Image (cartoon, rainbow, N blue to C red; front, side):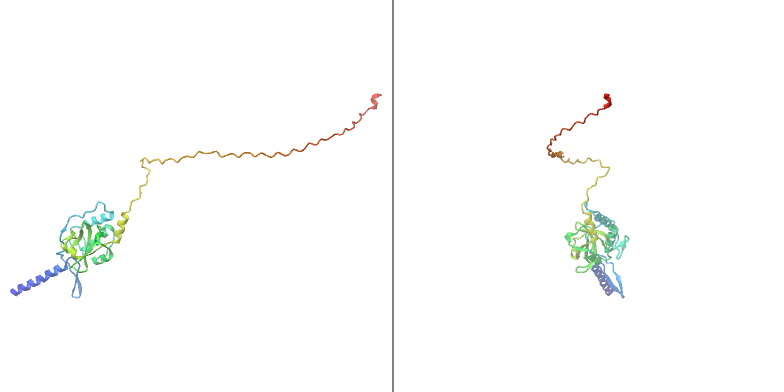
Amino acid sequence: MLGVKVEKVIVWGAVMLSVVMTGCGSLRHSNGGRTAQLSPPGTTCTDRTSTSAVEVPAKAQPSMSALLTEANSWLGTPYKYGGNTRDGVDCSGFVLQVYLRALDISLPRTSAQQQEFSRKIRRDEMKPGDLMFFSVREGGNVGHVGIYIGDDKMIHASSKVGVVVASVTTDYFKRNYLGSGRIEAYAKRLASESKPSAPPVDTPGDNTPKPTPAAAPVEPVRPRPQPQPQPQPQPARQPIKTVRVSPQAQPAADIDEDFFD
């Protein structure tokens, strides 16, 4: 009887050890030549978790606001390994759905693929909406992902309690932190939405008085000088020749001789 009890204790201890080792990531094992999915319980992944709402910064750009609002709507969704809906979702499925629904940006399915897809950034460069990647156990590969929301917090799908807000300053996340990434399409939207808007254009219904521009000084019009008539040269006078008329003999009067008879 004692041997049976000891055997049960050994088996139970082995089960609990495997549970702790799986953490909150995505692992696989061989099962008769087939690959089976393990649904890790994540007993150490939910330290300092909260179901409090995600706070959207007052000066958040439209894309950031939409992303955080969509993430907040998933709070309380149960965890389901391989899940991709509000009935149950895992960590990478949650990130995929938030980006797709909020911004129509498609991401790869697994956390490792999402890390490769994103642009690597430093931890002090993170903005709300960036991704944080963790290993399931210290020294391992990427097996968990969450969305950073600011103030050293992230929202993620915990395998123990589902979608929650968690502090990333816990010992577990510090030990297993592997890096941060920014989705390039998300970064371009934030940049375009941060540009200053164009000045307003006057509309026909705008009756606001506008300042009258100062009139330019008017130069006096000076009369153009009229061309003076040039004196025409007078032709030289020709000397008058004196013509002497020679006296001519006066013709004799016709006498009608019959007049005197």
